[in-house]
Image (cartoon, rainbow over all chains, first blue to last red; front, side, top):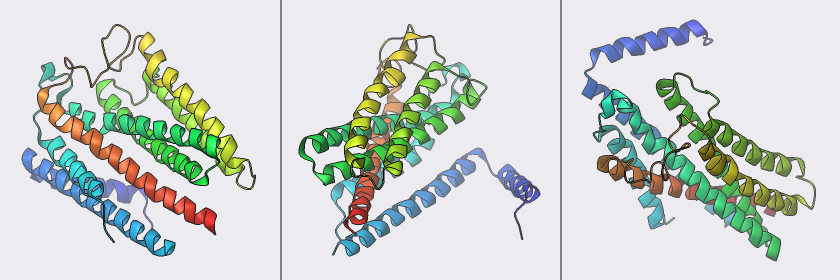
Length: 58
Length: 221
């Protein structure tokens, strides 16, 4: 299904309705958890790239 | 493969900055800054990192001009490339903060304009490198331009914005360097701010090193 602006708005509205169910502390917890996952993926990718480049050097 | 200790330190410092950055109590400040003060942990370290990477980049540019060592040229280009990315992230995080604090993401403030000019000058460095790809003078010309761009960084970011009234901290009439002035920064904020500077700068060095290895391989084949 092509992503159009209405789909994005619907996704945004869903996020807002999920967000309204959470307390302030829980929201911060969710934000931190999401950021930690994103950064963990980024570091995993960096280590993977390093390994790949080291293999190419050999 | 053995990951060096400073890479583990980078990972620890970045995770600490993210987690503590959201949890550490920030001063009330009459509700003026409120929670947006947390941007200090992510916006300012980008500029510190950028300055350190650009300084190392110009150092390697001078080494290349003196010795003609290709490794120095690759190091210089990699450091400038990652430094530019950090500058771009710094300008974006600043604009997001400005939207909440100044009412507009871009208000033509001297600091914003100065930072944009400095980044555009470094962007030209990559345009030179891209356009002279097949020329034998690519490394020498880009090293010379790197020194010029670095010299222009100081007036555009550090000197001119401080000579004018600015919405940004550190404008005309303010003492010291914002973020480093002991009167400006709460002790709680310092607990996260300094590790964040170290973490993001080390991350910049790590990515630069990877980029350097990639460039070296690219030019080898």
